Image 1 (spheres, rainbow, N blue to C red):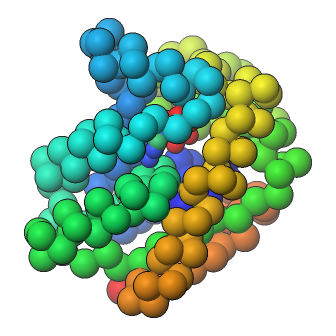
Image 2 (image 1 turned 60 degrees about the vertical axis):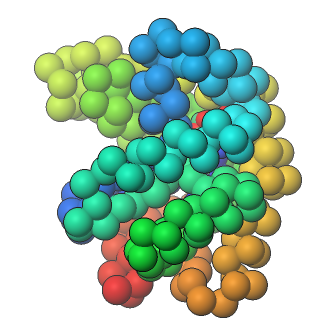
Length: 214
Ligand code: AMP
């Protein structure tokens, strides 16, 4: 968990490489649905391009399906879900029914001014999803993916500054209470990692935090 731009997507990709679990990013799943051109994808795009959260009913249904169909033997790394308390309750119910534990919640913290600079400079590969930054995490060749034969990097439609501000306020209003929800429950380990440093430093701290969750 963590605000938009804290590094969830970048770091989750690195952590699954290290630990071997499956990465399930709600944002990536929604962007794939949008790219498919379906009616559902068009509906999702309306919320996403405004920086608003997608309604819980849609999110819970799509994520429940993704969790059920994922090959979860080595575990799942959920990124961007749950983002509201009702979503967290639905996830708890699904895991309880499947007899699967939630090992922990990792929160990446980041200052607001760093967030805006990070998100507006963020670029990603439309083919593999790898995330770069025009200043802080440059590809080897400007504007091209290191891993995908020079595919041109793109900016997400919701990474424009005015949309970022909306996404930040949605985070504070609707998603921060989820951290309190897990803390209050007491059964789930909640660890906080400072995400303000350079990406490699943050990865090193996260590897320790995730290893500690067992
Ligand atoms: P992300 O890639 O995680 O930044 O997500 C991009 C956008 O997808 C968000 O700004 C929301 O509009 C939508 N979204 C992703 N995950 C969720 C979620 N769990 N609940 C509601 N909306 C979501």
